[in-house]
Amino acid sequence: MEWDILNIIAIVAFAFSGAIVALEEKYDIFGVYVLGLAASFGGGIIRNVLIGVPVIPLWEQGFLLKTALFAITIIYLLPKRWLKSWNRWNDFFDAIGLGAFTIQGALYGIALQLPPGGIILCSVATGAGGGLLRDILARRRPMILHQGIYALWALLAGLLLGFGFIQSNNPVQLYLLFLVIILLRIFSIIYQWHLRIRNLENT
Amino acid sequence: MEWDILNIIAIVAFAFSGAIVALEEKYDIFGVYVLGLAASFGGGIIRNVLIGVPVIPLWEQGFLLKTALFAITIIYLLPKRWLKSWNRWNDFFDAIGLGAFTIQGALYGIALQLPPGGIILCSVATGAGGGLLRDILARRRPMILHQGIYALWALLAGLLLGFGFIQSNNPVQLYLLFLVIILLRIFSIIYQWHLRIRNLENT
Amino acid sequence: MEWDILNIIAIVAFAFSGAIVALEEKYDIFGVYVLGLAASFGGGIIRNVLIGVPVIPLWEQGFLLKTALFAITIIYLLPKRWLKSWNRWNDFFDAIGLGAFTIQGALYGIALQLPPGGIILCSVATGAGGGLLRDILARRRPMILHQGIYALWALLAGLLLGFGFIQSNNPVQLYLLFLVIILLRIFSIIYQWHLRIRNLENT
Image (cartoon, rainbow over all chains, first blue to last red; front, side, top):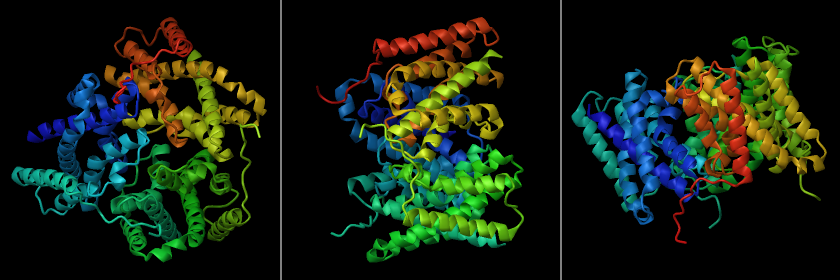
C-alpha cells in the first residue's frame, strides 16, 4: 500500500543524509555505506531493541536494503558541485523521512497492540533513532538532542496516534498527519523555531 | 518491598544527573529528557542486551517512568542558582543510585538463576551502564571508564552476591551492603581515591 | 576443532588492542578491562543484535572470557617500554584477529542457515564490530570507517562464503581464505592501500 512508497522515500532520504555526513567527515567508501545504512535502518533497530522485540534482519528487508544501497551509491558517485547544493534538498527530504518514519513507527507499535506510551516510544525511536546513530558514528553532537524542534514532531505524531486522536486505519487522517509533520518541520527550519535552551552559564 | 523505594531513589538520582549533563551541553528540552531517561533506564537496557534477555519496555515500568519524567521536569524548571550548587548533592544522590542499582542488578541476575559471572555482569551493567550511555550521548569521556573507583564498587557488590557471601534473601545483609557501597563511593570522592592509571608517555 | 584456536588468537589480539587504546586514553583499570572486553566480544554482540538473535552471554563463553581477561591483565602489567613497541605487533595480531573473526562470523551465519546477505552481515559485523565499539567508547574516530581497506576484507570473506564460492565445511579452503585475509590486511598496511576518499572541500 501507499506506506511502502513513503517508507522508500524515508529510507532514501536518510541514506542520503548518512552518506553525506560520512563524506563530510572524510570517511572512506565503507564508512559511507555504514553511515548511510545506520541512518536509514538505525531507527528501526533502536526501536526494536527498546521495545524488546528481535531486530528485523536487514536481509529480510531486501527491497528497502537494495534501495538504500543504490541511494548511497548515487551520493558516492555524484559530481562534487551537486553535493554542495545538497543541503537545500536535504532539509526537504529529511522532513519527508521524518514524517514517514514517525508514522510508520507508530503504526508498528499499534500493530503490536502496545499501550499509548509504547506507541509514542516507537514513533520517536523510529523517527529520530537513525539520525542519532549516524551522529554518534560520525562523532557529531547528536542533532536531535540540541537542534530544537525536530523530535518534537515525532513525539506529536506518537501522541496523536497513541491516544487514538488519529485513527491508524484511516488513510486520509494519516496522510494529513504526514503532510502536517513535513510542513511543521520545514517551518521550524525556515523560521528557526527553537525550543527553550537553558543556559547554565552566567550571561 | 523496600527495594522499590531504593529503585525510585536511584531512578531519580540518575534522571537528575542526565538532565544536568544535557543542560551543561546546551541540549534542548528534548535532549534533556532523552539524557535523563538514558541515564536512569540505560543501565537496565544495556544489562538485558548483554545477557540476551528482551529489554523491559519503558511503558511497562509506568510508575518509575513517571517518576523519572517528573524528576527531569524539576531540573528543567529549577532556578539557575539552585543548579549551580547541584554538584554537591549530585555526588550524594549518585552514590545512592549506584548502590541501589548495583544491588538491584545483582538480584535481577540471581532471580534469573545466572551463574556468578552473570550476576557480576548484571550488577556492573545496571550500576554503570546508565552513566556510560549518558556520557556517550553527551560526547563526554565516559566517567566510569576513567574516574577511578566508581564501577569498582558495583563489581564488589556483584562479587559478594554472585558468590553467595551475601545472601540475596537477607534484607539486613542487603541493606548493610547498600550502606557500605554508598560510604565507599563517597569516601572515594572525598579522599580522591584513584585506581592506578598507567601513563604511556614519558614523564 | 582448529577454529577454536583461531578464535582464541582473535580474542587475544582484540583484547590487547582494546586495552592499549584504553591506556593511551588514560582510562583507569576498569576502563582498560571494559575496552578490552568490548573490543574482543563487541563484534559478536553487535552481530547478534543486528540479526535479531539473543546475545550469547559472556559467562557462557567461560574459556574465551578467561583468556581475554588474562590478555588484558598482561597488557596492564607489561613494562612501559614493551608497550611502546606494541604497534608493530598490533598490526600483525589485529590482521589475524580480523581473519579469524570474519570467517567465524560467516560460519555462524551459515550455521543459522541465513541467506547470503545475512552471512555477509555476520561476517562484517563480527570482524569489524569490536573495533567500532572500542573506538566509540574511547571517543576516537572509528578506525574501520575511515582507515581504508580494513572492513573490505571482512566483506570479501562474507561474499565468498555467503555465495558458496568457498565451502564452509572444507577446512583447506577456510585456512587458505584465512591466510589470504591476513596477507591482504598486512599488505594494505605496508603499501598503504587506501579506498578512494572523496573530498568535499575545494582543493
